Length: 514
Ligand code: ABU
Figure 1 (spheres, rainbow, N blue to C red):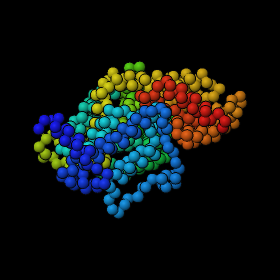
Figure 2 (cartoon, rainbow, N blue to C red):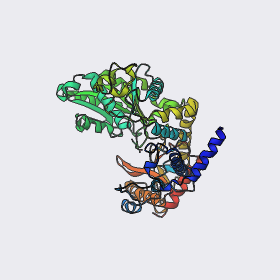
Figure 3 (cartoon, rainbow, N blue to C red):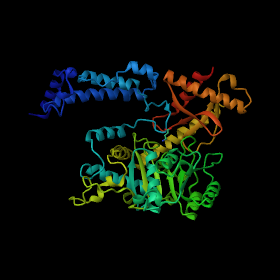
Figure 4 (cartoon, rainbow, N blue to C red):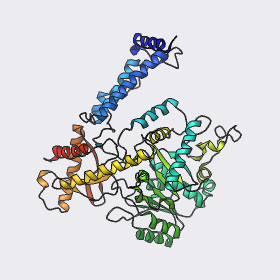
């Protein structure tokens, strides 16, 4: 039988098979002869996914078909039935689900730090799901464990940690938590067996604009949130080194032990970069661990033009860097890197006999599962590896440079339309652009506190209009003494100058009469 005949027969069988009334039990693996039905089902699923992908790139389609939770509960059947639903229903469920999902890959979606839908990375995620393995031992994930080894080593080399160790974690907050527990382990290894009573009162420092995860880790680790000290920032949102040193001294005077400084490279709202070198000097002087939370800004390391924002990063003891943010890898993909090898495993190892037998027939140092606090670990490496292969280092550099070029274009356009938009930080350091939209009635008013408060009241109203219309999504929040303002993020490689122009005109169309 030729290949061509085989192919024709398969196509014929597929056409003959009306899979719609089939049940899950007609598919592989329950039905050993169910390959054709399985293939037909999955091809239909792929068609549904392709429709979503097509719409996500189609500027004339909406980003979201928004409904309030109570409406959505009526529109979508969330129930788990007693008896099986047939395959047609399962296909409908998939279609319906995507109908109500926000298209985060749409070029008019500027809402989160993670925007866009990289097709190669997505293909990687599909493959990962099909391989469906757990990342705790080489035994069951040999190719992916080695891939982690190579990619994480490359990332450490980019950071400037030639001999360290790294791990992928479920999100930046957990990566930061890893840095804190490893820092504690290095300074107080007896904590592992004796618990908190073995420790002095440990104090952590992080900027008042940093991500809440450091505070969260303070609560989780038993230091107490009162012992996570927020260090004041300058007018650009960067930690003030002199303030850090003052607070460290204060804490020593109280008899506490300052031990950890979190330096943010890319704050969540403003995208500010704390100054690494002066903070590293203070950490060296007071024997504190320097962690860099570059979950957001880490992607700049891939660009010769933008890397300078993280100058001095190699002086840190640990770095969080999330490829699912600026690098556009599919969610989720978060990495944490340590300068010193061996600490991660020393800190977390529990030697579970049923997984990490030491007498296996291969090099058990590749069983990475005992380095982490979780047991089961998702494969987050393949989608990053595949995406990086498809772009190469040069393609990634262009990707990062493009995001910054689009951001500069947005800032330029907002400055041109200064009667309608007020830039709060006119020279953004990252791809975060923070501004108020000014409706017609407030355009000639004096720019005082009352005016700001009114713009702050308008911001959520305009956001609601965007969501109800479904044409645009931009996030907002208050910060310090600034009432609600928009924070626009360009982290999708699909954004073009025409999308920036659309953002400006659409906000004005939706908001001019507020
Ligand atoms: N982990 C911070 C993400 C926040 C954001 O996307 O806006």
